[in-house]
Image (cartoon, rainbow, N blue to C red; front, side, top):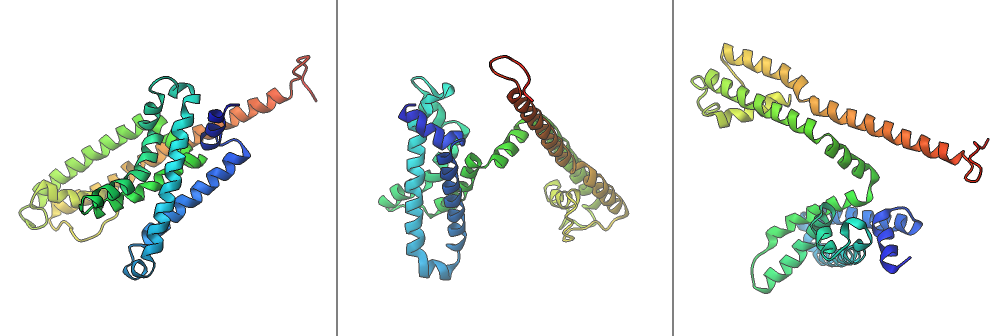
Length: 268
């Protein structure tokens, strides 16, 4: 096994003991980064421990940079990233972009500060580091695969929900505009009420007062209960299908182990 293959096995394949501990270390580092990001927003903590926060951030960026460099070095060992532009293809893949976005704000801030440009707004991009967790969590990878597999159904349900939002906002505008011009002054303003009602949140800051408006509000709330539950059903079906597929694969593996490789007889 070459050095490239060995590195790729550790950082990407998640099958060896070294890869297991590497994954645990990176997940812990990502979690600590998010905790530090939250704590740093407290003025008192930032004043007392600001230096330590910046030091930890710089160390984390160094580790994440080395990790990305290792991935770029080793990725040509996989067929889809082989060839002349394999590393560029990896860098612009979903995982590559996530790794790049995790470190890019830090380096951009350094560059901008060198030219005396205020780049503090880039700090908010540090929250994107949590996306690196998708590399190392099988559960999150599974969720991503389910979203990808059910993308057409989820998109269809989103279109239906947006259509209902538009229709409800329009009807409520015409029903309540004259009675409450300050709250239903336009279809755009009515959309706030429609979102709160259709999602069954119901903040109560905007409510219909006309008979027609109340009727539409009641109907919208009832429809929203069922319609906005559709994505949940789609994802639940996706998890069930994934479980069934995984159980089928595991059964096939167990059956294959029971067959003798030499004589083909089923072993008891």
